[in-house]
Image 1: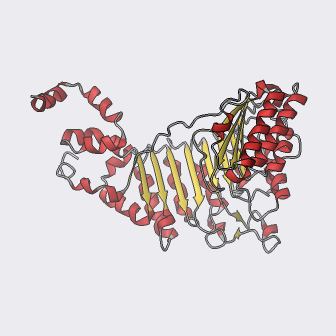
Image 2: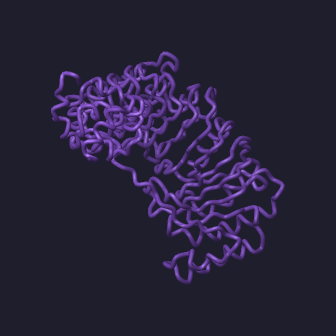
Image 3: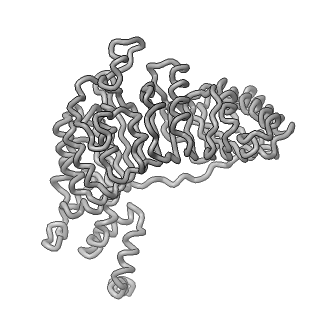
Length: 453
């Protein structure tokens, strides 16, 4: 009876409710739902193609050949990873990617991992992506052998009509904008021959990284593993109001810590007046007054011994939340630094940073290459309860770690009221939300070949 009633019950549902059901299914359930009938497949198409992940040029070309062009209009997030290519061809990759972007007019987020640069022919494709808000570009190759041009990524970013979120990882400086780095010590990879990138209608031929500050719509800027020594960071007119800024997380490995510090301070002094959330990966020494700063994230690459000094540099900024991400091996030193920080809170209660700060979260990573820290912090510390008891709690944490470094910290400190140890929270396991060509064997089904599709 259930078997006969189920189809009739489904048939009686209005079309709007059917679409709502298909839209709210989990990825795995959507796949199963799409195989039930021709109707359910049609309903599932927008969800099936909402997030697409393609590994390599071969998958990209296969996707273009196998997927009907009208289905690409449903793509909202596109992740193309060329790191799997044994022999990367910039020309073939550019041609295939340009074809796909032309088919995805509603694209909202684009993630590109490229072992080198694409050809400038890719740039005009971005002018038609009016829904694109987030762009992430990373060089998955070696900077010395396959550099990714700053001129190319700046021109692409400036071509996107409504770009608000930009993430760049390991972008190579151009010899056109950094001639002083060519043949100089220390060796910093510099790309020569990228003068083929044409002048931009707005930015002209000034396509160095500081030109990103001239993009009015930009609100989030994250730059990692990139040389930031261009002095134009301090002189370029700032036409955007950045809300989130990340600098120096895995900062330029070719420069000394002092040079990276000076570069970060130059950018913060010029462009961080509107920043509300800051990711810091190198120490600070010069006092900075960031009047809108509310959240501060400290990267594990920032030396522990410079933690208190860097926080003191932001003493006049009204930070209310501080997150420290540290390497597991640095925890003993980290607790000592936190103890020093608690003393600073007590001594400078009237300064903006210490007066506004409400809590500190400490998270750990297994190594410096771990992209995201655990979902749950190692512990949360309520700064407003800072007292000699809080200092004693931190000292107790340090002693426990020194005596039994492998023991669970919660076992020793769950009775300490001055610190709130966060119990692990369940992390939502990301399903396979992005469609790959290898997983599209069911595309050969009868209803895919149906004229209705």
